[in-house]
Length: 122
Picture 1 (cartoon, rainbow, N blue to C red):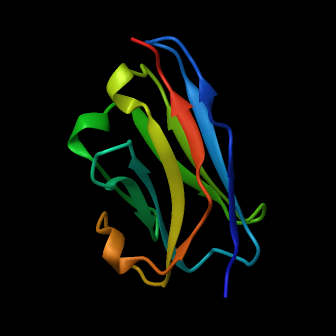
Picture 2 (cartoon, rainbow, N blue to C red; picture 1 turned 45 degrees about the horizontal axis):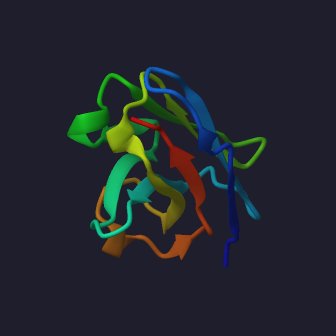
């Protein structure tokens, strides 16, 4: 129903910044969306979610990450500042479709992108 393409990942030094982008194939005005991440051998965790302008963040990224979206560009963003080695993971964009409820639970999301790698060397 909707295709998602992430970009913006890369390798940065601790304390640096990256902005991830997720371009959707359809309009996202009424979608609840989120960013998730998963490191090798670890569980997938919800990083940030957005719906109706409301946002929710994983405790460990509060104050450092900001989720936003541009409906005209059909793009979801994740601005990541003050990056730490613990942020190293594959980051995925996901859609919960027509919902006004923000969620960080992966099992509530229906559509997923292929992911973009973020690496912060220690």
